[in-house]
Amino acid sequence: MKFTRLRRRSSRLALPAAVGAALLSFGLASPAAAANPDPIPASFDFSDCPTLPAGASPQFSHCWVGVVTSGTFKIGNFDQTIDKPIRITWATTFNTTTFETGTVFGGLHTEKMKIQDGLFGDPFLTAVYAKVEYAGTFEMPPGDDLRINLGIKVRIQNPLLGNNCALGSNSNPIMLNLTTGTTSPPAPNTPITGEPVSIARQEPQPTVLQAKHVGNSFAVPGASGCIFNWGAGNWLVNQIGGFPSAAGKNSMVQNEYIVSKQYSQL
Image (cartoon, rainbow, N blue to C red; front, side):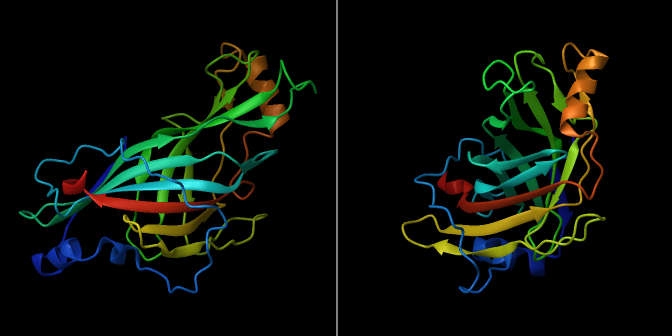
């Protein structure tokens, strides 16, 4: 499971970065950056903030909460509008003794979304829902485009398919490589561009940031675990959904708001 990244930096550089305004770590865009089209959430939930690693300073470590308010998620033949919030929580840490910085995953919360009215056309018994779940990988490589590498699996929910039908797994996740910059996908997808982090609201505190993450270079594996992992059940989902779906045929676009608090303020 990959969810923590630590790196050593010189004391001359690391300490000012830790004690400076946390917003600067994102390389904030100018006020001319495009605004998130959705209302700012009434509140932000910090309950998933992860425990700090040993030696990390509560004064210089931050918990971040990102809320995806809208967007699109296209995998295979399913082209889904994101109409329910997705919340992701992580921490950026700083050790004042070793001058190490790190990133620690906190949690991913989603609600199920209907992706098809019914496997056989009816809107009730065979309606199909999808729920995105964390699959064990979270990385934030350094850079100005706020890249996020996130491993997920998509739970396919339907009374006929059982409780374990999914696309991806912890051992074979769907690896989203999200950026606020411009993607470089394989064909037939073409490059798409996100929106850099900018300030959406400064008062009341905490300061609310906004951004748009995009990604269209990821692959989606075939279904597993459907109808007690019966081969015909997996085949049915794959036939209807177009899975496995190669890189260059899938995409994610998400509008989001982001807030943070020092651990000493939680």
